[in-house]
Image (cartoon, rainbow, N blue to C red; front, side, top):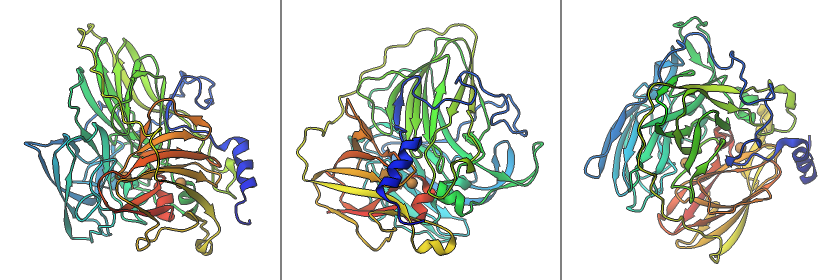
Length: 503
Ligand code: C2O
Ligand code: CU
Ligand code: CU
Protein backbone atom coordinates (compact mmCIF):
# COMPACT_ATOMS: atom_id res chain seq x y z
CA UNK A 1 0.00 0.00 0.00
CA UNK A 2 1.30 3.42 -0.86
CA UNK A 3 0.33 6.78 0.50
CA UNK A 4 -3.31 7.67 0.12
CA UNK A 5 -3.89 9.44 -3.13
CA UNK A 6 -6.69 11.85 -3.68
CA UNK A 7 -8.02 9.73 -6.53
CA UNK A 8 -8.10 6.66 -4.37
CA UNK A 9 -10.00 8.51 -1.72
CA UNK A 10 -12.52 9.76 -4.19
CA UNK A 11 -12.78 6.22 -5.47
CA UNK A 12 -13.62 4.99 -2.02
CA UNK A 13 -16.12 7.76 -1.58
CA UNK A 14 -17.72 6.84 -4.88
CA UNK A 15 -18.43 3.32 -3.73
CA UNK A 16 -20.57 4.72 -1.01
CA UNK A 17 -18.49 5.33 2.07
CA UNK A 18 -19.41 8.96 2.53
CA UNK A 19 -22.49 10.91 3.10
CA UNK A 20 -23.47 10.76 6.73
CA UNK A 21 -24.82 14.11 7.74
CA UNK A 22 -24.68 14.86 11.39
CA UNK A 23 -27.88 16.49 12.35
CA UNK A 24 -31.38 15.79 11.31
CA UNK A 25 -32.32 13.45 8.55
CA UNK A 26 -35.83 13.24 7.28
CA UNK A 27 -37.65 9.99 6.81
CA UNK A 28 -36.22 7.86 4.07
CA UNK A 29 -32.72 9.26 4.02
CA UNK A 30 -31.39 6.58 6.35
CA UNK A 31 -29.54 3.50 5.26
CA UNK A 32 -31.72 0.65 4.12
CA UNK A 33 -32.13 -1.94 6.83
CA UNK A 34 -31.68 -5.64 6.25
CA UNK A 35 -35.39 -6.15 6.64
CA UNK A 36 -36.13 -3.31 4.27
CA UNK A 37 -38.25 -1.48 6.82
CA UNK A 38 -37.20 0.45 9.87
CA UNK A 39 -40.43 -0.63 11.51
CA UNK A 40 -39.56 -4.30 11.58
CA UNK A 41 -36.82 -5.34 13.92
CA UNK A 42 -35.49 -8.77 14.61
CA UNK A 43 -36.48 -9.49 18.20
CA UNK A 44 -33.01 -10.87 18.84
CA UNK A 45 -31.33 -7.49 18.33
CA UNK A 46 -29.43 -6.30 21.39
CA UNK A 47 -31.21 -8.29 24.03
CA UNK A 48 -28.68 -10.53 25.73
CA UNK A 49 -29.81 -12.61 28.63
CA UNK A 50 -29.18 -11.26 32.06
CA UNK A 51 -31.37 -8.22 31.65
CA UNK A 52 -34.95 -8.77 32.74
CA UNK A 53 -37.09 -7.66 29.78
CA UNK A 54 -39.19 -5.48 32.03
CA UNK A 55 -36.40 -3.42 33.61
CA UNK A 56 -37.43 0.21 33.87
CA UNK A 57 -35.05 2.86 32.65
CA UNK A 58 -32.92 3.92 35.60
CA UNK A 59 -31.41 7.37 35.66
CA UNK A 60 -28.10 8.35 37.14
CA UNK A 61 -28.29 10.39 40.35
CA UNK A 62 -28.67 14.13 39.76
CA UNK A 63 -26.38 16.71 41.36
CA UNK A 64 -27.81 20.19 41.08
CA UNK A 65 -26.22 23.57 41.63
CA UNK A 66 -27.40 25.72 44.52
CA UNK A 67 -26.97 29.48 44.72
CA UNK A 68 -24.78 29.46 41.65
CA UNK A 69 -22.42 26.73 42.82
CA UNK A 70 -22.17 23.01 42.13
CA UNK A 71 -19.58 21.33 44.29
CA UNK A 72 -18.91 17.72 43.35
CA UNK A 73 -16.45 15.11 44.54
CA UNK A 74 -16.15 12.14 42.21
CA UNK A 75 -13.86 9.14 42.07
CA UNK A 76 -12.85 7.43 38.86
CA UNK A 77 -12.64 3.79 39.84
CA UNK A 78 -12.35 0.40 38.15
CA UNK A 79 -13.79 -2.81 39.52
CA UNK A 80 -17.04 -4.73 39.81
CA UNK A 81 -19.67 -2.52 38.21
CA UNK A 82 -23.31 -3.03 37.36
CA UNK A 83 -23.50 -2.95 33.59
CA UNK A 84 -25.91 -4.45 31.07
CA UNK A 85 -27.78 -6.19 33.88
CA UNK A 86 -24.66 -7.98 35.06
CA UNK A 87 -21.72 -7.44 37.32
CA UNK A 88 -18.82 -6.64 35.08
CA UNK A 89 -15.25 -5.56 35.59
CA UNK A 90 -15.58 -2.05 34.23
CA UNK A 91 -14.94 1.52 35.33
CA UNK A 92 -17.18 4.35 36.40
CA UNK A 93 -17.37 7.64 38.22
CA UNK A 94 -18.16 6.63 41.78
CA UNK A 95 -18.40 3.10 40.41
CA UNK A 96 -21.49 3.68 38.32
CA UNK A 97 -22.20 3.86 34.59
CA UNK A 98 -23.06 6.55 33.66
CA UNK A 99 -21.70 8.85 36.37
CA UNK A 100 -23.99 11.36 38.07
CA UNK A 101 -25.85 13.91 35.96
CA UNK A 102 -24.67 17.44 36.73
CA UNK A 103 -27.36 20.12 36.43
CA UNK A 104 -26.34 23.74 36.29
CA UNK A 105 -27.54 27.13 35.08
CA UNK A 106 -25.79 29.76 32.99
CA UNK A 107 -23.51 31.82 35.24
CA UNK A 108 -22.91 28.94 37.66
CA UNK A 109 -19.55 27.74 38.89
CA UNK A 110 -18.73 24.04 39.08
CA UNK A 111 -16.07 22.92 41.50
CA UNK A 112 -15.32 19.28 40.70
CA UNK A 113 -12.78 17.32 42.68
CA UNK A 114 -11.82 14.20 40.81
CA UNK A 115 -9.96 11.48 42.65
CA UNK A 116 -8.15 8.97 40.49
CA UNK A 117 -8.57 5.48 41.91
CA UNK A 118 -7.63 3.90 38.57
CA UNK A 119 -4.26 2.25 37.98
CA UNK A 120 -3.52 4.73 35.17
CA UNK A 121 -3.49 8.47 34.46
CA UNK A 122 -6.80 10.19 33.86
CA UNK A 123 -8.40 13.66 33.82
CA UNK A 124 -11.76 15.26 33.09
CA UNK A 125 -13.20 17.20 30.17
CA UNK A 126 -16.55 18.99 30.13
CA UNK A 127 -17.46 18.34 26.51
CA UNK A 128 -19.27 21.17 24.74
CA UNK A 129 -19.20 23.74 27.53
CA UNK A 130 -18.20 27.27 26.50
CA UNK A 131 -15.70 27.69 29.33
CA UNK A 132 -12.06 28.56 29.88
CA UNK A 133 -9.52 25.87 28.97
CA UNK A 134 -6.85 27.37 31.22
CA UNK A 135 -5.34 26.29 34.54
CA UNK A 136 -7.81 24.22 36.51
CA UNK A 137 -10.59 24.99 34.03
CA UNK A 138 -11.60 22.62 31.21
CA UNK A 139 -7.94 21.87 30.58
CA UNK A 140 -7.30 18.66 28.60
CA UNK A 141 -3.58 18.75 29.42
CA UNK A 142 -4.10 18.16 33.14
CA UNK A 143 -2.77 14.77 34.27
CA UNK A 144 -4.12 13.15 37.41
CA UNK A 145 -1.89 10.27 38.43
CA UNK A 146 -3.21 7.16 40.20
CA UNK A 147 -4.05 7.93 43.81
CA UNK A 148 -4.10 11.68 43.23
CA UNK A 149 -6.90 14.22 43.17
CA UNK A 150 -7.42 17.39 41.20
CA UNK A 151 -9.99 20.14 41.68
CA UNK A 152 -11.44 21.69 38.54
CA UNK A 153 -13.19 25.04 38.60
CA UNK A 154 -15.45 25.57 35.64
CA UNK A 155 -17.21 28.93 35.37
CA UNK A 156 -20.12 29.10 32.94
CA UNK A 157 -20.68 32.51 31.36
CA UNK A 158 -24.01 34.22 32.10
CA UNK A 159 -25.08 33.79 28.49
CA UNK A 160 -24.09 30.11 28.26
CA UNK A 161 -26.50 28.32 25.90
CA UNK A 162 -28.81 25.74 27.44
CA UNK A 163 -28.61 22.12 26.40
CA UNK A 164 -27.13 18.75 27.17
CA UNK A 165 -23.38 18.31 27.46
CA UNK A 166 -21.23 15.58 28.95
CA UNK A 167 -18.02 14.80 30.75
CA UNK A 168 -15.41 12.13 30.09
CA UNK A 169 -11.66 11.55 30.52
CA UNK A 170 -9.28 13.19 28.06
CA UNK A 171 -5.81 11.85 28.79
CA UNK A 172 -4.30 11.29 25.35
CA UNK A 173 -3.78 7.65 24.47
CA UNK A 174 -6.28 6.37 27.02
CA UNK A 175 -9.48 8.20 26.18
CA UNK A 176 -11.14 5.45 24.15
CA UNK A 177 -10.28 2.73 26.66
CA UNK A 178 -11.52 4.77 29.62
CA UNK A 179 -14.76 5.87 27.98
CA UNK A 180 -15.39 2.33 26.69
CA UNK A 181 -14.84 1.05 30.23
CA UNK A 182 -17.68 3.29 31.48
CA UNK A 183 -16.25 6.69 32.41
CA UNK A 184 -18.78 9.27 31.23
CA UNK A 185 -21.75 11.25 32.49
CA UNK A 186 -24.22 13.94 31.41
CA UNK A 187 -24.28 17.67 32.12
CA UNK A 188 -27.48 19.66 31.67
CA UNK A 189 -27.46 23.43 31.39
CA UNK A 190 -30.97 24.57 32.15
CA UNK A 191 -33.06 26.96 30.07
CA UNK A 192 -33.72 30.51 31.14
CA UNK A 193 -37.33 29.96 30.08
CA UNK A 194 -38.45 26.60 31.35
CA UNK A 195 -40.12 24.35 28.80
CA UNK A 196 -43.35 22.85 30.15
CA UNK A 197 -43.05 19.05 30.03
CA UNK A 198 -44.60 16.13 31.86
CA UNK A 199 -41.18 14.71 32.65
CA UNK A 200 -37.60 14.90 31.62
CA UNK A 201 -35.26 11.98 31.02
CA UNK A 202 -31.54 11.72 30.49
CA UNK A 203 -30.56 8.93 28.08
CA UNK A 204 -26.84 8.35 27.86
CA UNK A 205 -26.16 5.90 25.05
CA UNK A 206 -22.93 3.92 25.09
CA UNK A 207 -21.70 0.65 23.68
CA UNK A 208 -19.58 -2.08 25.17
CA UNK A 209 -18.32 -5.57 24.53
CA UNK A 210 -18.31 -7.82 27.57
CA UNK A 211 -16.16 -10.92 27.57
CA UNK A 212 -16.22 -13.95 29.84
CA UNK A 213 -18.57 -14.82 32.63
CA UNK A 214 -21.08 -16.45 30.30
CA UNK A 215 -24.67 -15.32 29.93
CA UNK A 216 -27.54 -16.31 32.11
CA UNK A 217 -27.52 -13.24 34.28
CA UNK A 218 -24.99 -12.83 36.99
CA UNK A 219 -21.73 -14.27 35.75
CA UNK A 220 -18.90 -11.79 36.13
CA UNK A 221 -17.38 -10.58 32.87
CA UNK A 222 -15.00 -7.87 31.84
CA UNK A 223 -15.01 -5.06 29.31
CA UNK A 224 -13.18 -6.32 26.24
CA UNK A 225 -9.93 -4.72 25.18
CA UNK A 226 -9.45 -3.49 21.63
CA UNK A 227 -6.82 -4.72 19.19
CA UNK A 228 -5.06 -2.71 16.45
CA UNK A 229 -7.78 -3.37 13.84
CA UNK A 230 -10.52 -2.26 16.28
CA UNK A 231 -8.62 0.90 17.03
CA UNK A 232 -8.01 1.79 13.39
CA UNK A 233 -11.66 1.18 12.56
CA UNK A 234 -12.83 2.77 15.80
CA UNK A 235 -14.21 0.13 18.12
CA UNK A 236 -17.95 -0.48 18.29
CA UNK A 237 -19.19 -2.50 21.24
CA UNK A 238 -21.47 -5.47 20.66
CA UNK A 239 -24.08 -4.22 23.09
CA UNK A 240 -25.60 -0.76 22.98
CA UNK A 241 -26.73 0.53 26.35
CA UNK A 242 -29.00 3.29 27.59
CA UNK A 243 -27.87 4.50 31.01
CA UNK A 244 -25.88 1.28 31.30
CA UNK A 245 -28.93 -0.90 30.65
CA UNK A 246 -29.89 -3.18 27.79
CA UNK A 247 -33.21 -2.28 26.26
CA UNK A 248 -34.88 -0.63 29.27
CA UNK A 249 -38.59 0.15 29.33
CA UNK A 250 -40.04 3.66 29.63
CA UNK A 251 -43.66 4.22 30.61
CA UNK A 252 -45.90 7.14 29.77
CA UNK A 253 -49.55 8.06 29.27
CA UNK A 254 -50.88 9.27 25.93
CA UNK A 255 -50.85 13.03 25.44
CA UNK A 256 -47.80 13.60 27.58
CA UNK A 257 -44.80 15.68 26.59
CA UNK A 258 -41.43 14.30 27.58
CA UNK A 259 -38.07 15.93 27.16
CA UNK A 260 -35.27 13.52 26.31
CA UNK A 261 -31.66 14.55 26.74
CA UNK A 262 -29.74 12.08 24.59
CA UNK A 263 -25.95 11.75 24.69
CA UNK A 264 -23.96 9.69 22.20
CA UNK A 265 -21.18 8.49 24.52
CA UNK A 266 -20.12 5.68 22.17
CA UNK A 267 -16.41 5.63 21.38
CA UNK A 268 -16.96 5.33 17.61
CA UNK A 269 -20.55 4.41 16.82
CA UNK A 270 -22.81 6.85 14.97
CA UNK A 271 -26.44 6.66 16.10
CA UNK A 272 -29.22 7.11 13.57
CA UNK A 273 -32.10 7.27 16.04
CA UNK A 274 -35.77 6.51 15.31
CA UNK A 275 -38.83 6.35 17.51
CA UNK A 276 -41.63 5.29 15.22
CA UNK A 277 -45.23 5.86 16.23
CA UNK A 278 -44.41 8.92 18.36
CA UNK A 279 -44.14 12.63 17.59
CA UNK A 280 -40.54 13.66 17.90
CA UNK A 281 -39.41 17.30 17.89
CA UNK A 282 -35.77 18.34 17.80
CA UNK A 283 -35.23 21.23 20.21
CA UNK A 284 -31.50 21.37 19.96
CA UNK A 285 -28.39 19.50 18.88
CA UNK A 286 -25.18 19.88 20.91
CA UNK A 287 -25.86 23.27 22.49
CA UNK A 288 -28.62 25.83 22.32
CA UNK A 289 -31.95 25.51 20.60
CA UNK A 290 -32.62 25.13 16.90
CA UNK A 291 -34.19 28.25 15.35
CA UNK A 292 -37.48 26.56 14.54
CA UNK A 293 -38.08 23.28 16.35
CA UNK A 294 -39.78 20.90 13.99
CA UNK A 295 -40.95 17.33 13.77
CA UNK A 296 -38.26 14.88 12.80
CA UNK A 297 -38.31 11.22 11.87
CA UNK A 298 -34.67 10.58 12.66
CA UNK A 299 -31.77 12.19 14.44
CA UNK A 300 -28.21 11.26 13.56
CA UNK A 301 -25.67 11.65 16.35
CA UNK A 302 -21.97 11.28 15.65
CA UNK A 303 -19.88 10.19 18.63
CA UNK A 304 -19.94 13.10 21.09
CA UNK A 305 -23.11 14.75 19.71
CA UNK A 306 -26.19 15.25 21.92
CA UNK A 307 -29.85 15.76 21.12
CA UNK A 308 -32.47 17.67 23.08
CA UNK A 309 -35.78 16.13 22.06
CA UNK A 310 -39.46 16.46 22.82
CA UNK A 311 -41.56 13.32 22.61
CA UNK A 312 -45.30 13.90 22.40
CA UNK A 313 -46.76 10.56 23.29
CA UNK A 314 -49.38 8.50 21.48
CA UNK A 315 -50.88 5.28 22.80
CA UNK A 316 -48.98 2.16 21.81
CA UNK A 317 -45.57 0.62 22.19
CA UNK A 318 -42.67 2.20 20.31
CA UNK A 319 -39.09 1.16 19.98
CA UNK A 320 -36.19 3.54 20.21
CA UNK A 321 -33.91 2.16 17.52
CA UNK A 322 -30.59 2.93 15.94
CA UNK A 323 -30.26 2.22 12.25
CA UNK A 324 -26.85 1.09 11.05
CA UNK A 325 -24.59 3.84 9.74
CA UNK A 326 -21.84 3.13 7.23
CA UNK A 327 -18.87 5.31 8.14
CA UNK A 328 -16.32 3.65 5.87
CA UNK A 329 -13.23 1.68 6.83
CA UNK A 330 -9.49 2.29 6.87
CA UNK A 331 -7.70 1.26 3.72
CA UNK A 332 -6.61 -2.30 3.48
CA UNK A 333 -9.50 -3.38 5.65
CA UNK A 334 -12.10 -5.18 3.63
CA UNK A 335 -15.53 -3.71 3.95
CA UNK A 336 -16.88 -7.20 4.53
CA UNK A 337 -14.53 -7.67 7.47
CA UNK A 338 -17.09 -6.11 9.72
CA UNK A 339 -20.26 -8.09 10.26
CA UNK A 340 -23.24 -6.51 8.54
CA UNK A 341 -24.75 -4.25 11.14
CA UNK A 342 -28.43 -4.49 11.86
CA UNK A 343 -30.96 -2.27 13.53
CA UNK A 344 -30.36 -2.07 17.27
CA UNK A 345 -33.23 -1.67 19.69
CA UNK A 346 -32.16 0.68 22.45
CA UNK A 347 -35.30 1.03 24.55
CA UNK A 348 -39.02 0.42 24.57
CA UNK A 349 -41.56 3.17 25.21
CA UNK A 350 -44.92 1.87 26.46
CA UNK A 351 -47.69 4.46 26.27
CA UNK A 352 -51.04 3.57 27.80
CA UNK A 353 -53.63 4.69 30.34
CA UNK A 354 -55.77 7.80 30.53
CA UNK A 355 -54.98 10.68 28.22
CA UNK A 356 -53.00 13.41 29.97
CA UNK A 357 -54.10 17.04 30.03
CA UNK A 358 -52.59 19.58 27.66
CA UNK A 359 -49.50 21.58 28.59
CA UNK A 360 -48.61 25.18 27.83
CA UNK A 361 -46.91 25.73 24.53
CA UNK A 362 -43.13 25.57 24.12
CA UNK A 363 -41.61 29.04 24.45
CA UNK A 364 -39.67 30.18 21.40
CA UNK A 365 -35.92 30.44 21.65
CA UNK A 366 -33.95 33.58 20.78
CA UNK A 367 -32.61 33.56 17.22
CA UNK A 368 -29.15 31.99 17.10
CA UNK A 369 -26.07 33.94 16.14
CA UNK A 370 -25.30 33.77 12.42
CA UNK A 371 -21.73 34.21 11.21
CA UNK A 372 -22.44 33.33 7.58
CA UNK A 373 -22.23 36.95 6.45
CA UNK A 374 -19.56 38.06 8.93
CA UNK A 375 -16.19 39.01 7.42
CA UNK A 376 -13.62 36.42 8.44
CA UNK A 377 -10.11 37.31 9.59
CA UNK A 378 -8.66 34.29 7.82
CA UNK A 379 -9.49 30.95 6.28
CA UNK A 380 -7.70 27.72 6.95
CA UNK A 381 -7.71 24.23 5.51
CA UNK A 382 -7.35 21.44 8.04
CA UNK A 383 -6.82 17.93 6.69
CA UNK A 384 -7.75 14.74 8.49
CA UNK A 385 -5.78 11.83 7.12
CA UNK A 386 -4.86 8.21 7.51
CA UNK A 387 -1.63 6.90 6.13
CA UNK A 388 1.58 5.04 6.52
CA UNK A 389 3.61 6.19 9.45
CA UNK A 390 5.84 5.28 12.34
CA UNK A 391 3.13 3.05 13.72
CA UNK A 392 3.31 0.67 10.76
CA UNK A 393 5.92 -1.22 12.75
CA UNK A 394 3.17 -2.23 15.15
CA UNK A 395 0.68 -2.89 12.38
CA UNK A 396 -1.05 0.45 12.81
CA UNK A 397 -1.60 3.21 10.30
CA UNK A 398 -1.04 6.80 11.36
CA UNK A 399 -4.01 9.03 12.11
CA UNK A 400 -3.06 12.64 11.50
CA UNK A 401 -4.23 16.22 11.21
CA UNK A 402 -2.32 18.16 8.55
CA UNK A 403 0.03 15.22 8.26
CA UNK A 404 1.07 15.23 11.93
CA UNK A 405 0.24 13.08 14.90
CA UNK A 406 -0.70 14.83 18.13
CA UNK A 407 2.10 16.42 20.13
CA UNK A 408 1.02 18.21 23.31
CA UNK A 409 4.14 20.38 23.20
CA UNK A 410 3.49 21.73 19.70
CA UNK A 411 0.94 24.47 18.98
CA UNK A 412 -0.63 23.78 15.60
CA UNK A 413 -2.98 26.74 15.29
CA UNK A 414 -2.50 30.20 16.77
CA UNK A 415 -5.57 32.42 16.67
CA UNK A 416 -5.76 36.05 17.84
CA UNK A 417 -8.50 36.50 20.42
CA UNK A 418 -11.51 38.18 18.85
CA UNK A 419 -11.11 36.81 15.33
CA UNK A 420 -13.71 34.96 13.31
CA UNK A 421 -12.20 32.22 11.15
CA UNK A 422 -13.50 29.96 8.43
CA UNK A 423 -12.13 26.43 8.39
CA UNK A 424 -12.43 23.96 5.56
CA UNK A 425 -12.09 20.54 7.13
CA UNK A 426 -10.86 18.12 4.50
CA UNK A 427 -11.10 14.38 4.92
CA UNK A 428 -8.51 12.69 2.70
CA UNK A 429 -9.28 9.25 4.09
CA UNK A 430 -11.81 6.55 3.19
CA UNK A 431 -13.71 6.80 6.48
CA UNK A 432 -15.76 9.49 8.21
CA UNK A 433 -14.19 11.58 10.96
CA UNK A 434 -16.45 13.53 13.33
CA UNK A 435 -14.45 16.70 14.03
CA UNK A 436 -14.61 18.23 17.49
CA UNK A 437 -13.33 21.58 18.72
CA UNK A 438 -13.20 22.35 22.43
CA UNK A 439 -14.48 25.61 23.97
CA UNK A 440 -15.62 27.51 20.84
CA UNK A 441 -18.70 26.17 19.03
CA UNK A 442 -18.64 25.85 15.25
CA UNK A 443 -21.27 27.20 12.88
CA UNK A 444 -21.61 24.64 10.11
CA UNK A 445 -21.71 26.29 6.70
CA UNK A 446 -21.76 23.09 4.67
CA UNK A 447 -21.13 19.36 4.98
CA UNK A 448 -19.91 17.83 1.73
CA UNK A 449 -22.03 19.57 -0.86
CA UNK A 450 -24.91 20.14 1.55
CA UNK A 451 -25.21 23.81 2.42
CA UNK A 452 -26.94 24.59 5.73
CA UNK A 453 -30.08 26.64 5.23
CA UNK A 454 -30.27 28.05 8.75
CA UNK A 455 -27.65 28.74 11.41
CA UNK A 456 -26.48 25.32 12.62
CA UNK A 457 -24.18 25.19 15.63
CA UNK A 458 -22.24 22.07 16.59
CA UNK A 459 -19.29 21.10 18.69
CA UNK A 460 -18.92 17.82 16.79
CA UNK A 461 -19.47 17.89 13.03
CA UNK A 462 -18.96 15.02 10.65
CA UNK A 463 -16.44 15.27 7.85
CA UNK A 464 -17.55 12.55 5.43
CA UNK A 465 -14.95 10.29 3.84
CA UNK A 466 -13.23 11.98 0.92
CA UNK A 467 -15.22 15.19 1.38
CA UNK A 468 -15.03 18.54 3.09
CA UNK A 469 -16.97 20.36 5.78
CA UNK A 470 -16.87 24.14 6.18
CA UNK A 471 -17.33 25.78 9.58
CA UNK A 472 -16.99 29.27 11.04
CA UNK A 473 -15.79 29.93 14.55
CA UNK A 474 -15.82 33.14 16.61
CA UNK A 475 -12.86 33.11 18.97
CA UNK A 476 -14.46 35.90 20.93
CA UNK A 477 -13.58 34.80 24.47
CA UNK A 478 -11.87 32.19 26.61
CA UNK A 479 -8.24 32.66 25.57
CA UNK A 480 -6.05 29.65 26.19
CA UNK A 481 -4.62 26.48 24.78
CA UNK A 482 -6.73 23.43 24.05
CA UNK A 483 -7.42 20.79 21.40
CA UNK A 484 -9.43 19.79 18.34
CA UNK A 485 -9.70 16.18 17.24
CA UNK A 486 -11.63 13.35 15.68
CA UNK A 487 -14.28 12.20 18.15
CA UNK A 488 -13.86 8.60 17.14
CA UNK A 489 -11.90 8.35 20.34
CA UNK A 490 -9.65 5.58 19.05
CA UNK A 491 -8.56 7.93 16.27
CA UNK A 492 -7.93 10.69 18.77
CA UNK A 493 -5.76 8.31 20.80
CA UNK A 494 -3.90 7.26 17.64
CA UNK A 495 -2.95 10.88 17.00
CA UNK A 496 -5.76 12.60 15.10
CA UNK A 497 -5.67 15.64 17.36
CA UNK A 498 -4.11 19.09 17.23
CA UNK A 499 -3.44 21.97 19.62
CA UNK A 500 -4.97 25.42 19.25
CA UNK A 501 -3.95 28.50 21.19
CA UNK A 502 -6.12 31.57 21.30
CA UNK A 503 -4.42 34.68 22.66
CU1 C2O B 1 -15.68 14.77 23.97
CU2 C2O B 1 -12.05 16.44 23.29
O1 C2O B 1 -13.84 15.53 23.64
CU1 CU C 1 -14.85 18.00 23.99
CU1 CU D 1 -11.61 9.61 12.91
